Length: 257
Image 1 (tube, rainbow, N blue to C red):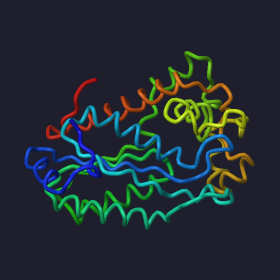
Image 2: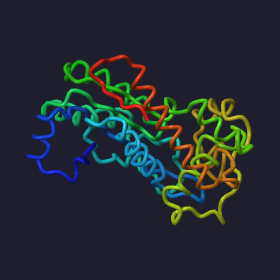
Image 3: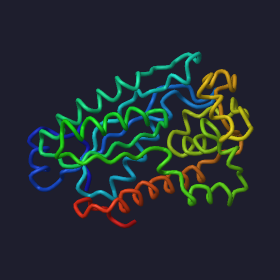
Image 4: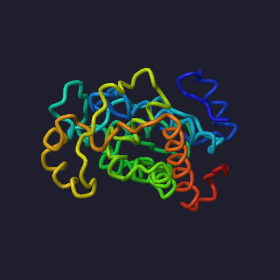
């Protein structure tokens, strides 16, 4: 059974590690706009849920608190943004990782529910391999979780990939209706950028979300529903589990679901 670090005392952590709980999952979210209908903490709520689901497949894991601020400068221009430079987040992860390794932890799983953290994660992995060579690093991001199973959930409901969207569309809105329905303002939900998600990426990188869509939404959230959100989350968790299982390391125990 995984344990939450924030709820433990130091002797409990010491005993857990001595008993073989030598994996730590460090979840990462963001504080950034998610359209006019979702809260700024959407990615942080999602990170907590995805980590809880994954920890069930990692019985020897300790779960760190979610880092609620990530690399989100593509959302500049929307009020409420909190963001870090890639270098800053990488240094934060490295600083935490070095201390975690000092406890006797052998594996650090970096789980990010915000895609913009990717560059910082890779920087952190490279540096930790140099500074904490005995610590095994695994990175799980939004892209590693997107799978045929996730797409099949949408297709079964007649939801197109472009409506599912990359940000605050049907996908994330459905997940939030499942996780925190009281924070979802469906009466304010409206279609944002509705074109090809793959084709918009170069422009998004060049001008940010504000230059692509005035609402900050990529996709169409209006068809979102909580039951489908639960299925999306389950598909993402399964994608993470499979990613860990296929990275053949006999020391990394993953329990079949």
